[in-house]
Length: 272
Image (tube, one colour):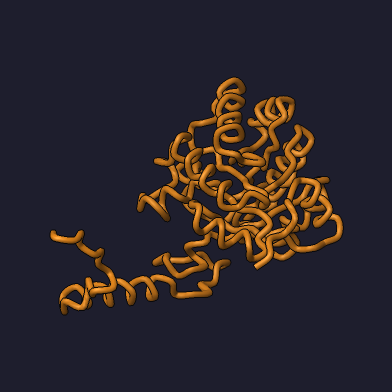
């Protein structure tokens, strides 16, 4: 499959302006990035969801900056022409100096094109400082998994007019501070529609309705790995069944002494 031209912020802005939908998926490793890069995916999000999908943790909090940097670097190598968005993990942006230093690591060592922060109006100085330092920021609003314990669990946001106003105002303030992208998670489409009207940058949705310029789901939900999937993610394949079938076939071949066969063996040296 032929790869697309390199995708940049300019590409994403143009797609948003022309209302061409932006397809985005999470990705955590080189081989998967290589596959997705050839399939028309515009943005690969190296999400801290790797803590749950890859490591088996119960939340995203155990993901560390170094862990996220390594994963981001792997995705960058696999998808050199796709826009790579690196997630800033829990505790990696508590203040301006720390946020700038850690974002620099994600860009310079991880190879990310931009970083994503779960934020609100209190992060306005941090977003402004990152923008001033030349870091492209995606402001993550709505449901914020890193704050689930404080927000009453994994609940969709924008339930009341007060919540709606807060999300719209926070999105506007983040854009004014320099955020180049807005990501809305688990909000009604009516909220997304208002945010799109309020900000000049592309708005990406994760369970946020059709009004967003682009949409993202967790790859493992799409491929059938997750025991429970959110209502906005339809499993489109049963990859675990394919892996299980291959593994069972291998185990059977070993147990039946069909593996290793002569074709799997190296020849011995003469006289050995």
